[in-house]
Length: 329
Ligand code: TXA
Ligand code: MG
Image (cartoon, rainbow, N blue to C red; front, top):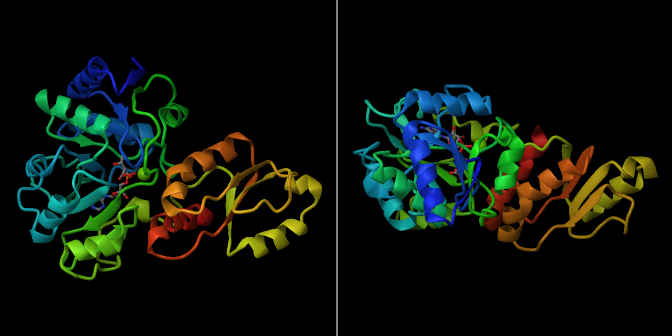
């Protein structure tokens, strides 16, 4: 049953049943596709680490229907986490909270905290509800890509990563397109571990004006914060502005230009490059298409990807974070 229809009730039930049995199921969320397994089954969770090639001490996010279901894994999440769940769940926000000691140790990578998220995507919600009805308390799911690679935002991307034998619940293209914002609520004040579409300012406002901490040495390990994460196969070069991109372009031979894919507001010339995609004006539009554009450039055989740096500013934090990591790889 490799590709299931996320909008067909029978297929959602089949996917939930597969999760119940301990099988892996990839599913859509509003951010990116996740590679899911029941969070309370150490062997099923182990299969995620094996499939991704991810080190076993890197914790996974556990997906739940809502704050009530979250209490199963974290009965005492603390005041800040409780406020953020009430304000932003379901939604693109992952909260790191103290874990109930006797549950989901493998999913948590052995840490005494756990990352929890209630996704808003209707297909994810339907799957989590159907699985819960079968006794599955939560679904551990990292992004459905091999370790260190670009996260998938369509079912086809997932199949590209893991081949046709993995069961994928297809819910179309993910609306947001970059991974959830992660806030570590085991510390006071909480720390922003990974920026996403939901911005720091909105989180700080929901907490009554508390300033979020920037991650430091005491913050938990989060591979999503490694400099080399989220990389396409081609080398990604980030230019400060269109002028510096155009200047670098002028210095290439026509043959060198044919190896370069360009993502910028204006093409440096009408043709001559491997591929060109116009950089949209809005941060949400760029986030939505970013990973698909990087994959398309890889698929087109680009040797290099040249990107014009989008504007600075809080709306762009998530996109700029992913671009800087991809450029550092
Ligand atoms: O949008 C998303 O968050 C997607 C969808 C599928 O929900 N998931 C995702 O998962 O991006 P993943 O595993 O690719 O990234 C999760 C990040 C990792 O950097 C992980 O280390 C961190 O969350 N994380 C999870 N649990 C943690 C914990 N207990 N302590 C610290 N970091 C944690
Ligand atoms: Mg990931």
